[in-house]
Image: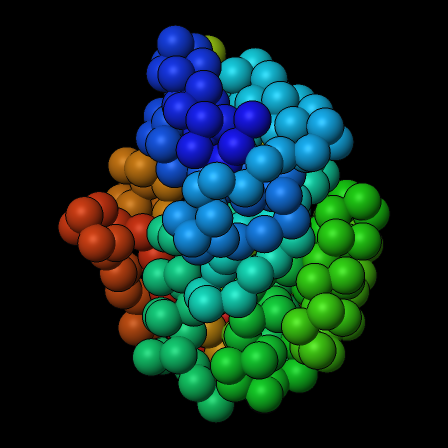
Length: 279
């Protein structure tokens, strides 16, 4: 079986299984099986698959048809122009989270000490260190996630200090110029309505915040007052329809509150500057 035939069969199988973008998915999975990039498939459509290559391709197709996300099959996902390793211990990086990076570079490009809370695969901590040169720390409650993040930092030559703890519980007070986070924000009641690729495969600890979806935001805003230095920023990704309720959490010691939309015009990032301890 050659590349052209294998792609045709893969596309049909994925279409029958109602998998989105079947042509692209088949190309990515076949390229993974061949240990090549997708350009190779175009230039070598007559390449005959070895038995091992065909077995790998068939397994990848089966996994995808069962709902396993392509990124967990290939073990990688691009974020802000860099390739990150991903496993089922971490959320798959989304393009929307790049707006957090862009907001940081606009509001706090000279922050000397950065903390990424709930780092997952390390995309925010690693990217911000590489983009700004700031000293970076990152926390996660999952030791398995921190192992993935540390491997990404090593491969991308980023210097980030990793801390296993619940949110910021192990971080010293008044020690950071910037806190960033893409926290869990899905209400538990919304679980049934999620895509199966998300609900059945991504780590629930990183998805679900509690009954309202606002529980982690409240904890982050409250403890940020302890961890931030005066004038420091808290910048977080927003869930759908959460802007007003999260904005209401900033009171007293906060100023310069703003939100930033994604490309669809949906409020995606919230940022506020800590004025200092309340007297």
